[in-house]
Image 1 (cartoon, rainbow, N blue to C red):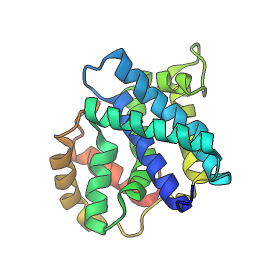
Image 2 (cartoon, rainbow, N blue to C red; image 1 turned 60 degrees about the vertical axis):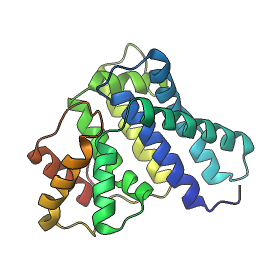
Image 3 (cartoon, rainbow, N blue to C red; image 1 turned 180 degrees about the vertical axis):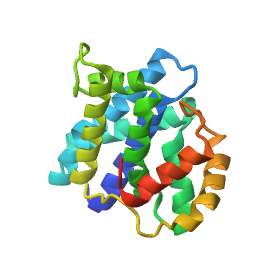
Image 4 (tube, rainbow, N blue to C red; image 1 turned 30 degrees about the horizontal axis):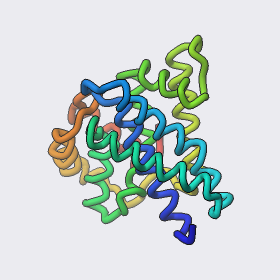
Length: 206
């Protein structure tokens, strides 16, 4: 309860990223593990904003502890994805705290998945209550991305990173490729796709 707000939101966004990447992973998962990943994301959406406005909300703290547990299950059972691969590399090169790097990468990379696995994003959007089963998959995916944007704004995260430099893209691409082989992303990105996403992260674009 006495933890600084930035510690609370950094840990919460990292947990959400684990859950999101678990939902998007290209790996055979049990329905139980998928359910835990979906619930991780839903719990963060519902409880992290409450802790920004009411830090001593014990119920919300307990729910975030559960979300962290489910996020830990996701990274152990379903591995991670490009949000973590990009964040690890950007964080290491520019000395940015891990959870802040996660927040920088979350929207551009999640948005890129609209063209890779829109059905997975749509299913998660429905589970979190942002869409209905009958909604168009693309529209449902867009609502989830919009909710992510609103959550990051509520938590005080800024978009874009002035520390990043285009001259470092080649080095970052190599680092990202080396890191991502440990994970299970929905698709293996080309060097050109990675450079494009680095540019979006640097500029704070989708």
